Length: 109
Image (tube, rainbow, N blue to C red; front, side, top):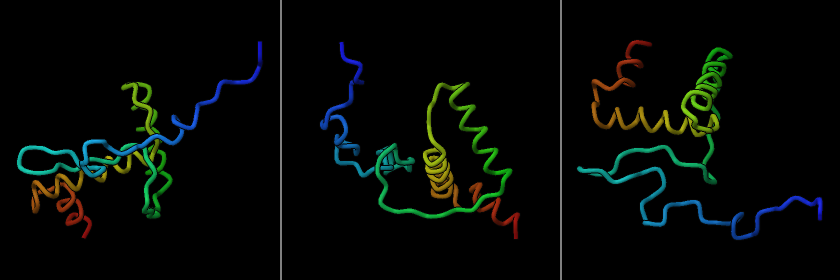
């Protein structure tokens, strides 16, 4: 009996990560047009840097742990941020002036 671990093959490591149906990543079809969605775990081609406070980072980590512990969802912080962005942008598309983003940004002025 060998003590070497079983490793995944090349087919498993280099599998396509995008949707097979031709819909662009991050979008799903709905009545009236595409709906925003965060992109699933995949290689992303663009990067931004966002600075957050210690409290915001701690809250994000608490949310990640709650998703894992309470809801059984294992996601990284990047995925959570992409989903949050998708939710806020979808709300802006749907509600415009009355969106959460517009109201919160106006409140900060």
